Length: 63
Ligand code: SF4
Image 1 (cartoon, protein in one colour):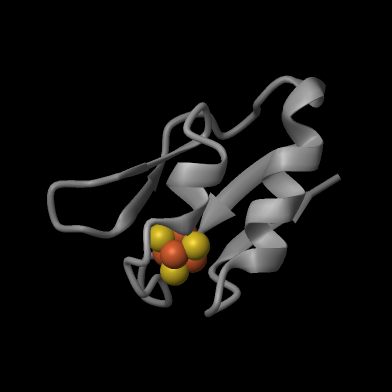
Image 2 (image 1 turned 45 degrees about the horizontal axis):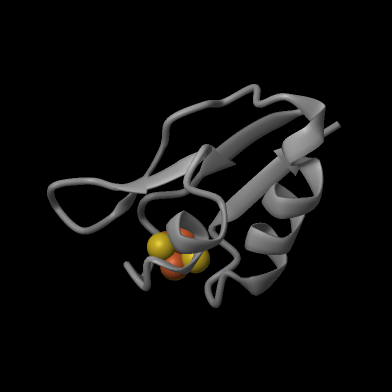
């Protein structure tokens, strides 16, 4: 699994960081940062939920 975020699209809601703080955090500028681009498979459900719930579809998950 490979996680990326389009920081241009992120609306700084903080939702993904709340849902899955092991993978997403909020940067100093308020925009999300991916802290683990290849997280453990056990985090897949949370990562996929975060991607689904992101209001601007800024989160992409490959594989
Ligand atoms: S849920 Fe989407 S818009 Fe909200 S902080 Fe995460 S990437 Fe940004």
